[in-house]
Amino acid sequence: MAKVLSIVLAGGAGNRLMPLTADRAKPAVPFGGTYRLVDFVLSNLANAGFLHIVVLTQYKNHSLDRHISLTWRMSTILGNYVSPVPAQQRVGPRWFAGSADAIFQNLNLIGDERPEHVIVFGADHVYRMDPRQMLDQHVASGAGVTVAAIRQPISQADQFGVIEADQETQRITAFREKPKDAVGLPDAPDQIYASMGNYIFTTEALIDSVKADNADQTSKHDLGGDIIPALVRSEDAFVYDFAQNVVPGTTEQEQGYWRDVGTLDSFYEANMDLVSINPVFNLYNYDWPILTQNPPYPPAKFVFNADDRTGVALDSIVAHGAIISGGHVERSVISPLVRVNSWAEVTDSVLMDGVQVGRHAVVRRAILDKNVQVPEGVRIGVDREEDEARGFTVSKDGVVVLGKDQKIPPA
Image 1 (cartoon, rainbow, N blue to C red):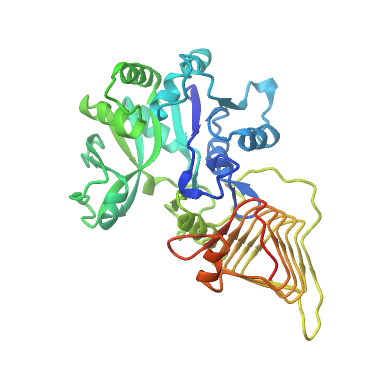
Image 2 (image 1 turned 180 degrees about the horizontal axis):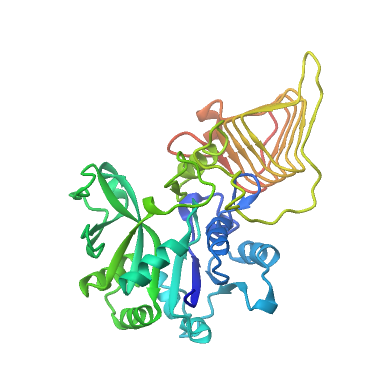
């Protein structure tokens, strides 16, 4: 295998996920009951055997650094590591100006490792991918950079960086940000290639590109907006079609699944993808597991089976340490140490670690961050005007979101 260094970009502020990012970096946001968003990219890299990984952090990084340090420990005797690297201001007293600048300010990491190729992946997408297959194409093509792309409806082209490529050689001929006049693919006129924000560079191409970008005073210092278009102009950029990536244990329904959870609604929808009977993203794939920390909590518990109250959860994920104590849970993600008390109703919701739902309370289409205490009889997600009057965040699609430790007045 070629010598590879993997760089995970985890420095974004994640403002569109507020209030979930009020106290943590976006890649550290809990997801799916027991995971953090960063676990998905790290699992893909680790399952593929890429075990020299640095995670570049910047904003509100303590929670993320702590999770990586406690969870992602590699065998030091083999020289493997996952290392969080905060902004070091090595080139002056400034933060990262963009993703390209983040790499420029950390070129010492590449110099220390001396890889042949550098994988640069984002930290906040939900998907399975075998990056070895992308690397194989990258090496065979001789490209300076290979850009992973997912097929999306042409009607959504104005939401993505759109790639146009020669269908025979896969060389990228144009890279346009959110075009209104996108051109469909020759084999699928109703689809376009949307950049996934995942790149593989030859080391020389990456170093030369970020150095040239740093000297350009007009640049926004962004990989997708500046570096890739420059390599396209020099005819040194190729596309990798994510649809051809085959991950062991993946069902036909799950093939090609990728979610950018950049907004509250997309984050909510990605969680809801997990709880259907035949989920479009299957956490129960033991051939390509999503890895994370598993604290020593007891098993989940369901208690009371009386005529007037029954502890039950249907079409839901219930994590260890949770107690459904006479409450009713349906189509929801229940994280560790959650307690749903008697006669309470939780439907179509995401409850993060330590949430307590009081007796007779109702929670619908909501995301409750860690340690939120729902008082007895309180209704959340039932009346939008009532929720907004109490200062709760309500998303564009009507999902009610409460931040970590947010206080709720009694009913």
